[in-house]
Length: 110
Length: 112
Image 1 (cartoon, rainbow over the protein chains, first blue to last red):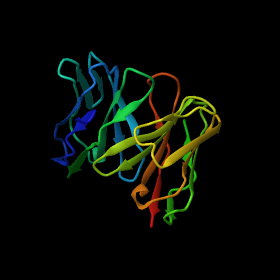
Image 2: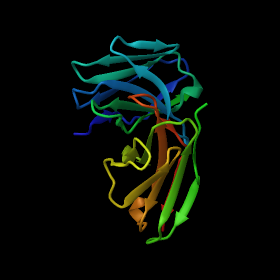
Image 3: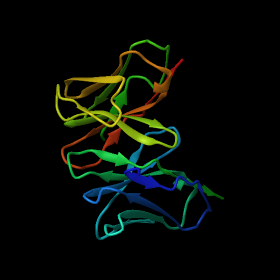
């Protein structure tokens, strides 16, 4: 079983739609979680951290469910510029090692 | 702004050649990482370093070595390039603790 698993998609949605991605992780001792965004032919960049209480940044909401070992990302009112690959990232309990999921592709169409 | 630079955006090498990929960061970060990214597999950690002259193997170190002689510079070396090392190589830097990693623009290496 992979340490971090994501639905690869692609998710094809119209502008203005709400879309949600889930990510599951296998190590119950994982402590920190992030969502990164990667545009085509670009490097990954941090989108947001994921806290136990959940957090929101504008149209983006991240949630953590430790009991079920998954994190989610909700994007409301999708924009064309949201088209990208979204990477789920889990920090293992030891050291600073980040484990990346393979990514979920989002395509927002007009 | 954190800046991580990599020596080449695109590189084409022949099987058996020795390949050097350079990465430089300007934020005085302690931690530096080398990943490769392949379709469907995501980013996989090759090597990382927490300090000068220090290195640790990641998940897929076979066929690679690294060098960190200065804090700002982390080099990835392919001793004898093979076709299965054709990939996108990404360098990242990070300050202490489980914090954000900042990535360079990547080097797309093709081994023929």
